[in-house]
Length: 223
Image 1 (cartoon, rainbow, N blue to C red):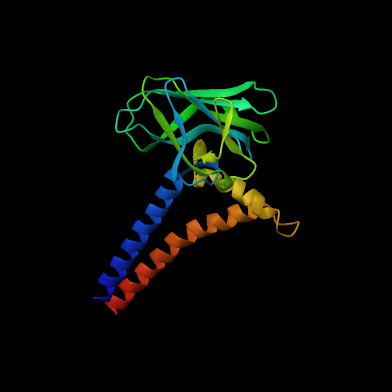
Image 2 (image 1 turned 45 degrees about the vertical axis):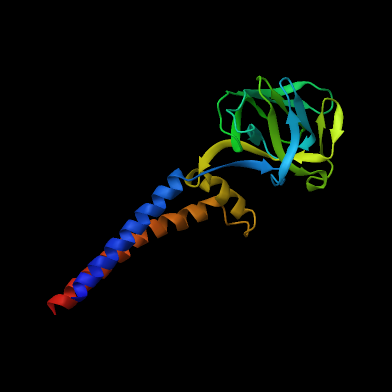
């Protein structure tokens, strides 16, 4: 009876370890940063050809995608374009386009043609390229201090709900960076190699402990 219980426990532990490794290899982190504006209402109404810009936006981390929440008045959404423009001169930094047909009241992610580097100040614009009306969701202007919305050259007391994304990386692929940064807060002789060694010991020790427990259970059963 005890041997059966030990085997069951070891099987569950092994499955848990495998699941943990799978999650570490596949779980992706793709958020670069966000403005922190909740989509509480309409920040800008865009007729065909209309354009709304969030300006300026400080870029703390590089990004190559923008998520925006849109309303389409219960109709299939029109095509639209996201334009990222340098705040200090109006030069286009990156653009991306979304096809028509997305549902009403939904978040659409637009991939940009190139990456926008960190450390810059940009204007992020949403331009309606279709024939139907488009509503960009956002919140009151105070939600993002120092930045605001401009529509057709006029300031609007709102902020758009924008989320900036970058290519996802699995949790496992982030380990080298995590270990390198962790070494900065340790004594001088402790480098990233120490954390790799500890991780390796853990991976080796778990199967060893499981095997030892199984052998011990078998001995107790025979005894």
